[in-house]
Image (cartoon, rainbow, N blue to C red; front, top):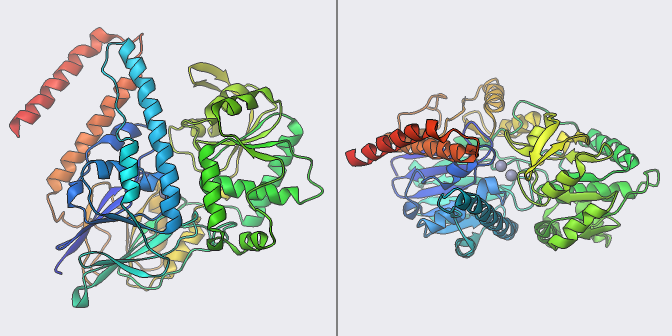
Amino acid sequence: MSSARIVFLGAAGEVTGSSYLIETDEARVLVDCGMYQGQNADGRNEAEFAFSPGEIDAVVLTHAHIDHSGRLPLLVRRGFKGYIWATDPTIELAGVLLQDTVKLMAEEAEWRSRKNSRRGLPPIKPSYGEKDVEETIRRFRYVRYDEKADIARGVSVRVRDAGHILGSAIAEIWLGGGDGERKAVFSGDIGPKDAAIERPHTMIEETGYVVIESTYGDRNHKSLEDTRAEFRAALEAAVKSGGKILIPTFAVGRAQRVLYEIKRLQADPTFPKMPRIYFDSPMGEKATRIYEKYSALLSREIQEMTRAGDNPFRPEGMSYTSGVEESRAINEESDAIVLAGSGMCSGGRIIHHLKHNLWNPGCSVFFVGYQAKGALGRRLVDGERRLRIAGEDIAVRASMYTLGGFSAHGDRDDLLSWASGFGGNASFFVTHGEPRSAEALAAGIRETGRAAAVPSAGSVYDLSKSGAAFSGKKAAAAKDPGRLDALKLLEEITSETESIREGLTSREDFAAIMPLLESSRLILRSVRKTR
Ligand SMILES: [Zn+2]
Ligand SMILES: [Zn+2]
């Protein structure tokens, strides 16, 4: 093997859309194929890939979260024919998450199509359907933790526990063999050192290259002890204020963690009596069953409780809500703890709970997860007091609690300590973080004498054999950089179109924008003709 390179397709300068392409002379392997989330995400998710899906030999999926797995069905739909390698629990959780995603996309497309038809615009088609998800699930192949597997010509992988969510993996990838062999480690998402329900993340000792996430590269979380004390105080205050306690939460990982923390508090006789608990998420129920099934892969605390015959994810007085009617019926109750998705309040059942309760000063909202820019959850956290939710203007009087310590991501110290486990020759690519966070982590790594770069989206880096040649500068693009740049631009144009479409309201001055739109179309057509 003479050369190898890595293309940073997504999660470059931002948190979502994780996807990296490794190319050697013999193989092309994708690590993750995630969705973008937050503002203008739709257009970017539907855009062309910066490669031909049919030319990809294999995919390694680090974990089930949609920002790592969400575009896999699109990859399959557009011609990917290889296998997707992941741990057993990741395969099961990804199945659950992708089925939910396809349902949400279909609902949204239907809603937008109805809106469009009233304006004489064409219907919207979701970017993939159930069949694509089924085909994706068929393409999964499992890898066991700590065992090496060959996945493409000259490419092998070994996954190690990342301690982020159940099944999450750090991927060690070897390229080529013999003299030409080089290695790159992909952190995936790294859990905190003192995770409560996951096992601690694995330290890895040697490699030429590391792609490291940086969600919290510029911040430290509270300790586990302080987080628990904070949650206890917040929940106690919220229970006493008597209204609903809404917990927007991801169905996988965070929800199980919150249920477990509630369960621990119930064991404390000094804690006030809690109202009924609704886990208002059919997907959450499925995910919890998978957590129960694979409890042997979870933390010592969880295993001990399970061995003692107790279920760590089932606090007293908790019920799952499956039907939509049951979910609506919760609106009739004055007090209850409600866990529902989506975690960033960008859709799902949490929307109707927010709509019915935010006006109430007795209501409390607990944010236990990351809130991307532009998401409704972020706007609530940022203190907006008037919002439009599901077509209604809502005045926000509820109390907001942000519990950052619940993160399933390691903080700055955790990431730096994980990075310090590698030998002195490792070079780092810092991804999966907002620019400030990524730059801060890169600076921290450089202080330890190692090279660190923050790659921009679409950038290509050569992976030299030694790894030492890496100087934190973007290498000359090895393969048709023009194409990647052009695709990136097209992606931006698509997302621009998307936000114009979103902004079209009845008050819009169509006369003013029509000529601009028509000339844009003319320009784009002439681009097509020059090809
Ligand atoms: Zn994740
Ligand atoms: Zn992630």
